Image (tube, chains in turn yellow, green):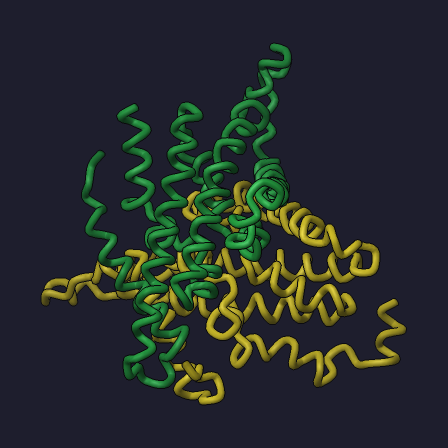
Length: 218
Length: 205
């Protein structure tokens, strides 16, 4: 089946590459489409959980998009929400069991937020908007692209919060000990939830200042 | 009784869904343009949380938790179905939302008209699933506590969305830097409101 498609359209045609790159910037799920904020903010106090969360979302999103795209002609529209939720929930169970088995400490830190990938609106949103009406391969690219657009914001926020909040990165001390002797203090405020919101607000500010098309009217 | 009241107050202020855990942010940001619609959505969230959390509590207690099936027969003492949690909870929430929608439509058309469009939205509001998952994680010991936790979380979410909607209505008249307008400033205000809510943190109940 993949051979046939190659004859018609190269796997990485310009259109397909756009599916992958648009969500990284001007169609970013978090800063432009306003999807998937909940989990994005809650897990970013440290870099490592943000990274694990990003990988989990990339996996769930790409697989869910492919599965729904394969099922798209067989699902009656009335029950599609339930079908989508069941597909996502099964994938999330796989991720959850995997995390518990191999990185138990991170799984504890993420606590309920692994489960909340199910109701992460990015996934539902992309399933509704894209996978229900497209072929599996573009749906896969769209899934990966959007999950990465979501992921880079998580990682940037996680980077700054861990650097300024605890002086470490990925659990390793990066702020030299000497600084503390001169009176440098970790800003405990960065660890607290409100700072994540303010950091995302600042990212939005930067992005829209560079790309003026995105500015809202009201 | 004291305990139940404590959980209620705590889940409104100290463990506020929006400001402490960022749950339900998507609809919080999308529907908070005017106070009127946000009151509708907030009421619907209280309603659905108050129903689904106790139901999920019962499901967890008598079906999913390790050894929960013991009421069927002592042979099931080792059965642990907790890996099915997500799929069970989301199924309960999706079907409860559907059921609540039908019941409300039949018995109270006025309430239906004011909540109507928001009810389906709620199935994918992470505050609802989050409420059930926190209930499971914190291991409340009886159904009264589960009910008061569900209702309290709903009220906390209601307060948050009505508050931000009121601020957003006013901020229309302010001169916000152009790139921050709309979404950006809403994020920052939510952060500031979160800081204000943190003053409840020290309260020991």
